[in-house]
Amino acid sequence: MCLICVELAKSKMTAKEAKAQFREMRVAMDAQHIREVEAKIAQAEIDEPTKP
Image (tube, rainbow, N blue to C red; front, side, top):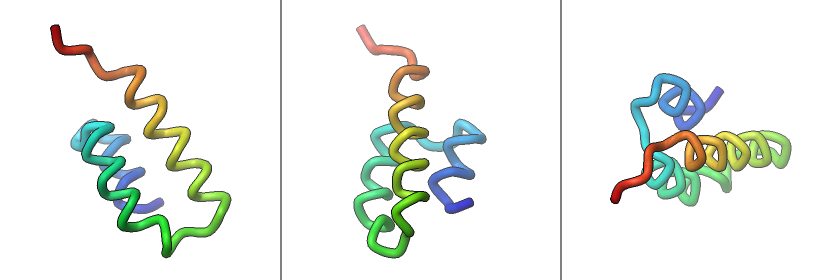
C-alpha cells in the first residue's frame, strides 16, 4: 500500500489532500494501483461529511 492508501484507511487524510498527493505520486504507480487509489479517493469523498 502507498502512503495515500494508508492515510485514507486511518482517516488521517481528507479526499482533497489525497487528490493533491495522488497527482504527485501517480507517475510512480502501476495502472492497477492507480485505479485502486482513484476508487478509494472517490469513496472518501462520499464518506466525508459535507460542510454547510
